[in-house]
Image 1 (cartoon, rainbow, N blue to C red):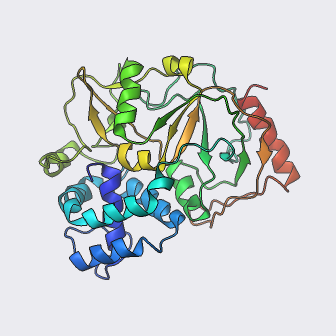
Image 2 (spheres, rainbow, N blue to C red):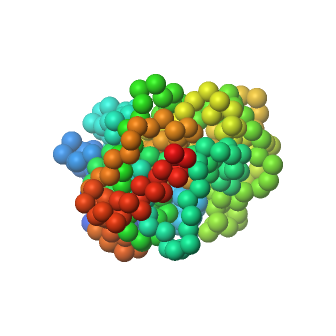
Length: 336
């Protein structure tokens, strides 16, 4: 109820029970009857449907690329207290699934066909200082997700910035000895940053709100809300993980679905000064920092409808041409 992705999901769940707001809209008020209907509906809601709502809510109602986030978040924070029954129902119904650690036998690597025919894959795990933005993650890592339910597949390729080209997926079984840092909330991300700190040396407008499609002058209403952790227009020191240091002690960093709902976009004050925020992870997934995988196994096509940029799934287990192409890429990424 203090996290931007969390308050966005609560509002979105209430909207599913209201006829006066379109499914893609956001409410300026809260309807008590709709709140209780939404809380009750969670007991029959498939887990994958909840995750779909969570990913789209975080992206379109609270994300730095959304032009509406600075308009919607003040109301979402103000009304969050009235949606506590929904939050309690989410926790009671889905607590175990949301907090589940990365299943080493269910890690999937998703791959989108490159748009550039001259694209050449390069090995991961070579230069951890090569980071995105100010260091939200290292570009030298490898992403996997834990066997996501079919209902959330479309939302994932949107959150992961896939661009509508054919998508395949592979199982990457993880060896039992792999060392993983788990993030179930903003305090876990802050602890990672404080254990392996690296001060950002350049500005990065997208790390917080206002983001790339927002204007600083629109933050006034959101900044006036004491409970919000979504915007900070002035900071002393911006700290993110030293990924080389993390890689010295761990093989991967796993963000659970609970961590996504509570830590993505959440500004945390650090004990020795400065602030940090996890940003642009987009869902449950693991950022791997070493090759800890057994033999990659091609999987069936992801359940994509084509509604996200026209993206469709490819069955790597039966499409021999795609399988050979993918295998070459993943073996290069793993430097095998």
